[in-house]
Amino acid sequence: MAKKTKTSGHSPRKLPEKAPKGPRRPIRKRRRGADAAEALTARELRRNSRDDLLGDPSDLRFTDTHEWVRIKDRTTIVVGLTDFAQMRLSDITSVELPEPDDHHYETREEISVIEALNTSAAFHAPADGVIMATNTELLSRPELINLDPYGSGWLVEMKPDNITDVLDLMDVDQYEANLPEDEEE
View: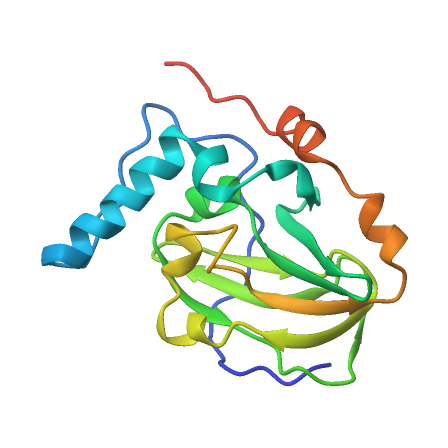
């Protein structure tokens, strides 16, 4: 098993199956001044115009465990947590990242744990392969996953055994069709 950069006593749990009742509460920011306004603006933009801020989602692939995958080049993929998953977790407080090494991960094998104020979730390998790099900025700024899940909130770069396995993952339309519907009051 790969070495972990940060450890924690919490056991990872799966994300809840159903959305919480009632309207979503905005995430409270812990920043002040211009940083707070900038973060709030980015959050509101993402909610109101995901495609404009995050780019064309058609270049992403998705897993049923809420990881997104972007093909960087013929041998490398970038992987992160979906916007849906980060909203379910809410305020992300810490991230365990694996060390880039020769450990070979199998599809759906846990590679990381993401902790939020009230819960934690496992982050899984979307395909068989080796981790080439991690986003170490998340160790000091885990809130980047909440602020920009498809950009600066990426978690790992992997070299998949077979890039066609990534192409077999869900596209954005299939992923969104499989998301649970919000419950009405």
